[in-house]
Image: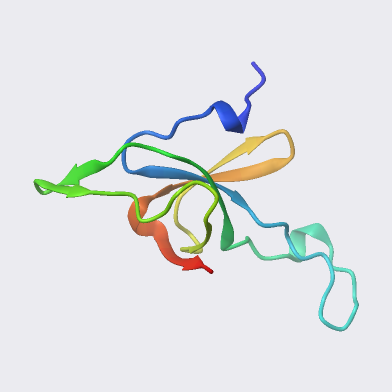
Amino acid sequence: MQLDPNKLTPMPGYVLVEPESKQTQSAGGIYLPENSTEKPQAGKVIAIGDNTFKDGIELKSPVKVGDSVVYKKWGGNDVKINTIEYQFLQFEDILAIIK
């Protein structure tokens, strides 16, 4: 089955983020091998699940589709679609919105 990330709807309390491209060149101009680059911590929100409840309190999404965000380095779950590793993140894994 071929997945289309634009047709995925995250479960309540989750957002789907397309990570920004990995940096393949250092500041000094040296090309980095793929296995030496760090996992991205920023990306663009492409889908949002419904609000969820925790301890009887409604948690609303802190972002909207199209927002650029910074998220926890080891938060979320990777889902590889074609050649891109998308991130399913819980609302609380998002650290900031990039303006």
